[in-house]
Length: 79
Image 1 (cartoon, rainbow, N blue to C red):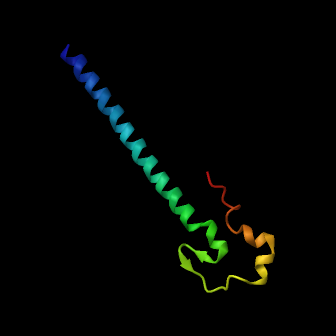
Image 2 (image 1 turned 120 degrees about the vertical axis):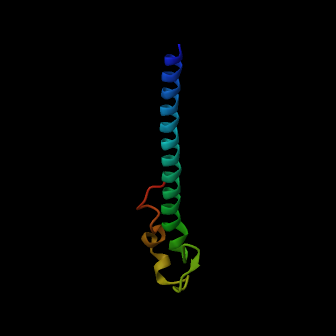
Image 3 (image 1 turned 135 degrees about the vertical axis):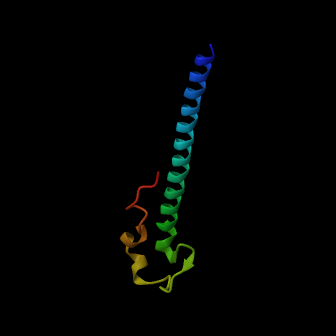
């Protein structure tokens, strides 16, 4: 009876370790995805890149081109 309990405890510990690994990997992958989303900010094509104001003036002839309005948004499909 004691051996069975020890084996069950060992199995439970192994399962808990696997859950911890997958939990930490999930958190790391979500953090990396959020960092990728921040670095490829869709607002970057509108004059701001990662929260910093760019030196390019907002109203140029590029604004009339619809291809430049898309920016990086359509290169990286988000979610």
